[in-house]
Length: 284
Image (cartoon, rainbow, N blue to C red; front, side):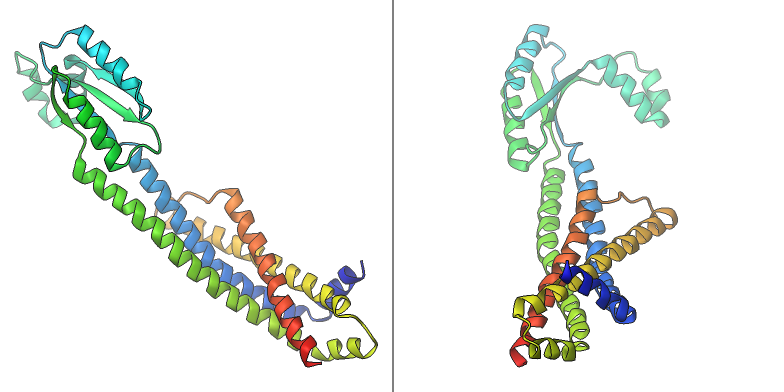
């Protein structure tokens, strides 16, 4: 209780210094928040594109229903396959008319439907890598009633490459931003404690233990970091609203990401305070 009272009293005694420290923490975490927002939206965009990855097998006109049914059962037994859709020649023609209305006259004037039936293979999440897609495509090509198999190999390879680049960029740039944020937060907390170095000196003179001296400063640092984390979340949300309304619609980050950022601010504050207090305790 003493540590809590002292921490709150310190905040009341120097609200400007506490506000400046919290502001520096907020700005540091705001940069991390913007990067997190960009990273999350990139991940969502790649996920939406990845959901469209599928393998299409074009079926010969003389294929028997029994052959197609047995192939479907065989493919569904593969752990990579989530769903199989059979598209008849009539359904393929109807879809072509809807997707290509500019060729409506061409489709209407034909006596024979030139479009083949097909099997559309939908893969499970986590199994949409180039190797898995190629393996399923090769499995389809062995059936005698399959005329051709398409899955856009070059497109799938580029999608997977973008995912790997995004993951590496998130790891390295996110770590760099977090390190910079930690340094800024540490500097802010050290400035606050430096302004109260005489108080530390007096407490040592009256016989206070290191733990007794350290606890209020740790709580104060945690409160400052917590306030900075909340402000950073508010700034990030404001930027999200501005971009979504003025430029293009973004997806807001999950709640656990926001809570992690706020908690990280509090932890940074405690850790920075611990190092700063330790330094001054050594000097006095």
